[in-house]
Length: 330
Image (cartoon, helix red, strand yellow):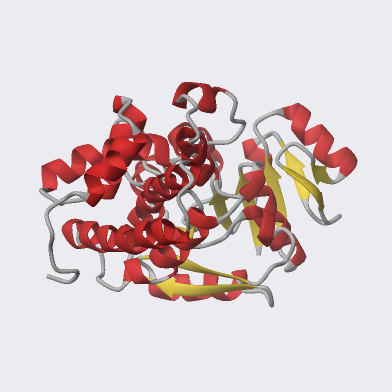
């Protein structure tokens, strides 16, 4: 398979490496020509994925046309805020009818649109899939055993992509719940910020376990409200990714929460970050949508109040703990 990977951050670079080592003719597109020059010269993405050598078969370019020429599949791995613009720029170069796969765990800021909706609008006539699950770039790039979920609405094409993407260290499961997998990938980032806040406050394993468990309840509750398959929140896209994102030192969302819990200001944290923590703006959208749907998401609301209203993290923990008593499973 000839594959175009659009986006040379840590995850885009790790995924392009995986495809190239699996024998696919892979081109990695980077927005900045100077990054492309460095990638070609040192065969390593020192800025986003240091210490990982890139295979000689992996090609690099700053031209979307060159990246997509003859491509049999295109993989978009750019931040949610940039996806629409990049997809529109890529549109004239995308070969007709090829599958489009995105690896983005976020929602469009301001509208709350899912990434598949953005891609369908920018690239009409192309089947769209999402690849999600617990897959930190730093670990995929070092060939740690990883399981992910590929979701889309074309089962036969999904099965072909599944076979192409599988390696001895990268196992791909298939789903037709595109909506549910995308929403799980976005909402778990908000919950991971909440776990990071509790860790930053100095709370321990009891608190972390409670937040992850009750966060899973919120994932399932929100999934029902938006029409996701009931099993999706309990699979790789939901529980699996929530555990990885809420507990890992690689997680940008957890790191933001941890620093908030330690007393830093959100604006200062974001100003110093090179990569994007998708859960920050997703929390604002999720708060609005949960109100519209009448869905109770107390943990996600607490994160929203801390991030966007400047409320005290300790006060939000107290508010959560002092809610009226209830049954665990109504």
